[in-house]
Length: 154
Image 1 (cartoon, rainbow, N blue to C red):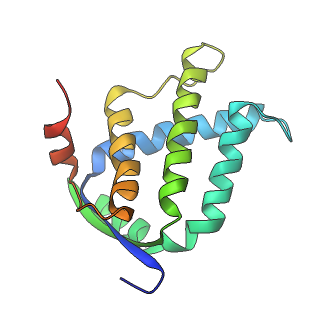
Image 2: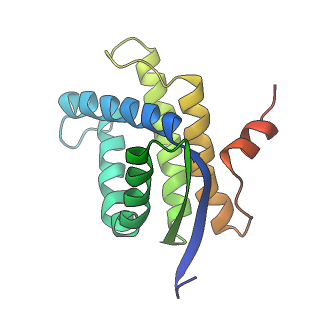
C-alpha cells in the first residue's frame, strides 16, 4: 500500500458481465446527458455531476486497472483480477454512486426513459463491485465475484 492510499483487489471480475453492465451504464448516461438541464436537482443531473466529480477525484487511480481489463477483454479471457491503489475517500464515492444508480433505476422503471432498468445480473455486479471498495477500505479481505454469488440469498 502506498502512503495515503488503500489497495483494493477486485478478484475474479467477470468480463462478459462487466461488458454488459458497462454497455447499459453507457446507454443510461448518454440518455441522461440528453435530458439534463444545468443546475437541475433531478436524478439525471445529480448522477452526471457525481460521475464527473468521481472522475476528477479518482480517475487518475483507475488507469492501470482499466488497461488490464481492456487487455483481458481483447484476449477473450473470462475473468481478470485487478488492483486499485485509491484514497480512502473512494468508499464514500462508491456509496454515493450506488445510491444514485439505484435512483436512476427507479427513474428508468417509471417508463419516462428509453433505457431499461438495470438487469438483475448487472445490478448484482454493480453491488458487488462498489461494495468491494467500501469493504476493503474498511479493512475486509477481497471477495471474488463467485464468492459474492455463493453468499447471495436465494
